Amino acid sequence: MELILALAIGVLTGSGVWLLLRPRTFQVIMGLSLLSYAVNLFIFSMGRLGLAIDKEPVLQPGVPQDLLHYADPMPQALTLTAIVIGFAMTALFLVVLLASRGMSGTDHVDGARAKDAQEMP
Image (cartoon, rainbow, N blue to C red; front, side, top):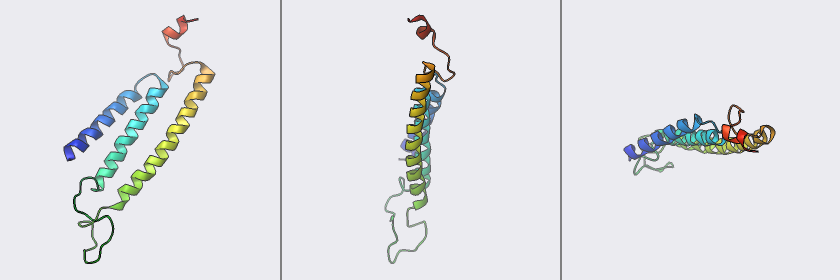
């Protein structure tokens, strides 16, 4: 399970970085989203919730109250907060992308038109 999770985090991070380096704004936004998903998986895996088996999520009578017997709720809260904030930021980035495309007529990150777009009437 740890190998699959590590590979998923690595693939998401690699794909996100590759998309961040692309010249189009939509690809940059998708790269940021993939990177945020990779960070969310990393934070979630640090709480041992996804990797722990037979651990109680809430306090039970008769079980010692330490993290050896329970799942840590902090990574769950951090991941949930990051998902909500990431969704709002993606929506904001898309609105800014549409406004920038409407004002400049191109969707390149640096604002320069592509050669194909300049040749078309």
